Image 1: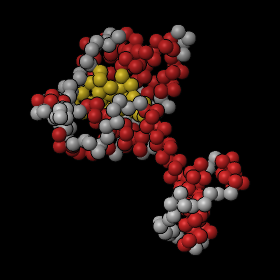
Image 2: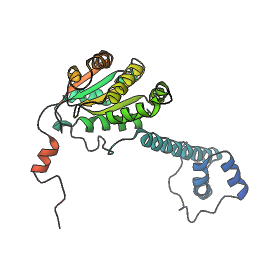
Image 3: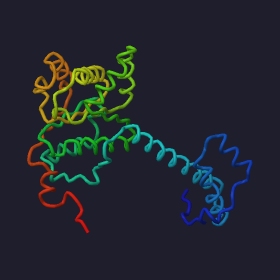
Image 4: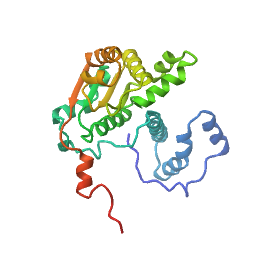
Length: 264
């Protein structure tokens, strides 16, 4: 059964009776309450069947709740910039196109596998992970975004009252946990321990994706060897490793004058 889309404007549609407004509020149906005047006015004008009215109202509620849930998941993820695949240029990445397409299916997240994207600065590592994170959120998955410093702060905050394990468990309510920009600086002890605790707790239960200037085999250059070995062992066991190469995209754009808008 299909309804027509021509509807009066919200401004011209008469308001709902107060009793009905109150019922919809008590039933927590905000999107039906918002769109009901317009739907009811359209139904009268086009002589809809009662079932068409119900379908239109509940479709508005479902769509509204999905939009709200998406906004909530996106805000909870804590993405750094908002970059998505809309701005991604597959041909500019050194990662093979078939691999990019396979990653975008998110099958690896559903299989609780990990992803490591490593390579020189400016070669699209963070961009790719954030775009994948946004795609996961849009697919109904929960994502959590961290830097190594964030993990160190988390550990210090919860070590005082011995709630580190509980804090890590809360992080792992996400289906995908991203740890960005490993390898730029030496890793503080708290951050190294935080990374290990996260990877250990997520092992075969959740997906962890990291970006790094170093291949994980070189993590012992950044953190204590014992922690590095234990972390990498669990991280790479079920992991896809993508190595980027080439010149920095940021530097290339800057040298070409495309890093800023011209001054007027």
